[in-house]
Structure formats: C-alpha cells, structure tokens
Image (cartoon, rainbow, N blue to C red):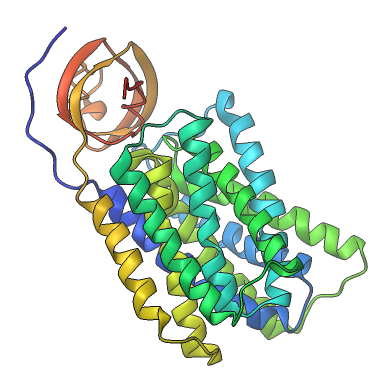
Length: 356
C-alpha cells in the first residue's frame, strides 16, 4: 500500500529527553568522586544504583498508568544483558578509573561511550547512519578528547583510563540492548536495572568485607544515584524509542562536557583554554545532528507490538473498547505493510534497511 508524502515532522521529544539525560548523568561524576573519598568503587556503585532503583520504584508506582506497556517476557533476556553490562560492570569500572584520575578528565573520557554506542548500533545492530551523522559524532568526541588531553597535562592511558574506556564499552553494549526494550515503560526498565544492579554490587561489597560509609555519605550516594543514574536512564530510554540508539548516544555525548564543567566548579580542578575549542567542536557536532533531515521512500513491514501511542500517521488501527481511544494509550496493535515517504528517525517504527 502506498500513501502520500507527509511534511517533515517537528523535532521529536527524544532529542530533549537525550539532552536532559546527558545533563543529569554528567552532573553525577564530580559527586561520585566525592563519594569515593569515603568508600570503595564496588560499594559506591551499589549505593548509586540502589538509589536509582529505590527512587524510581516510587515514581513507577505513582505514575503507573495504562498508557505504558510493561516489559514483555520475550524481552527479559535483552534487559538482563543490559543490567549485567550497564548496571553491574560499567559503574564499578568507571569508579575504579575515577579513583586514579581527576573528575574532569574522567568525565571527558566518558565520550568513548558515545563512540562505542554508535559503532555497535551501526555495525552490529545495523542502525542507519550517514556521513552527516558520522561527522557530527566525530566532532562531539573530538571536542571531549581535546579537552581531556589538555586537562590531563599530557594525556596517556594508565590503568585508570583503561578502566573508564572499558566502562564505556560496557555502557555502549547496554545502550544497544536497552533499545530492544525501549517500547516498554521507561520507569519500569530503570527501576529493574537499578534495583538488581545495586543489590548485586552491594552484596559483593559486603561479602568482600567492605563496610558502609558514614550515614551522610550513604544518603548522598542514594540521592546522586536517583538523579544521575535513575532519572537519567528513564529519559535515555524515552529517547531511544524516539530517535534510535546512535543518535541518542550522540546527544548523550554532551554528558562528559557537563561533568567536566561541574568538576571545575565544585572541585576546582584545572583545565586550560582548550575548553573553548572543545565547546566549538562539540557544538558543531550537535548542530549537525539537530539539523539532520532523513527523508526517503521506505516500506513498513508487517509488525505487531505494544507500546504507548496516540492516533497518528503510524497508528490508524481500529479500537475495540472506549478506553483505547484515550491518548496516550497502550495495547497490542498491528501495523500493516505500507510504503511511505516522510522525514523520520530510526525509532521503534523505522528499523528498515537502507541501500546507501
């Protein structure tokens, strides 16, 4: 079936979600550095993610509505992989690296997460990209690396940096696995990840004989985890469903820059004038993504799934009950094969192949 060309849609909310997620996560790094002064990386990781799970569990039950789809059993394996790589391994590795490096340098080295996320999305999970997107990603990463090199006063790859890069690889895997379940309730996804990851790392720390830090540090870690890991992750999931993995990762690459600036303000860590060059590079990269227009004729294959949606150009199906007409709403629905020409992103409805 062929339907007419539609005008380009407004910028999706996913961009705003990704940017806000980046800001919240970036702000977390200097506070994590402070927490490490009182406890070990494993204990800190456990407390941060436990705070994420506890805080989001409250939000999940308060905001629980029929407009969001619960995680289906068939997606549990994807989520389990995301919890292992992104919730258990990555934070411990990042905090181990943070012990040996300044918060500003660690923040900026976290740009590698965007690189790994994009490379895996493009070459393993076959998400579409073009020269403009690749150039934008390269500029964002280059901006962070320039500032990292200058701020580190002779950038090298000691054990701390290698640990942070390994954490970024784990988060890159996590981001691509989480995209597979992004049609489901983002608060439920983030709650499960935080609760399981926090409990596992905390249990490991206690088995190894580590003690809890002072009460004020525990409360601080739980609070930072809720904001910097929990809310950030929920927003990240909402961005994934809207604009795809690689583009979400690109916008999220602003997080290291936010973390570096916060480190300078809170910890008074030195950094040179290269920050202006870095800002220009990253700003140009973000602009390339914001101004992207991806329009071509494409075919939607037969698809049956469930997620929160409204009645729009992709959702013209009939409804059986009156409650299904409330917007947004969630129920299992079928997309019939259709050929379309309109502006789009690689969201949950546009995972088609591209010839070039």
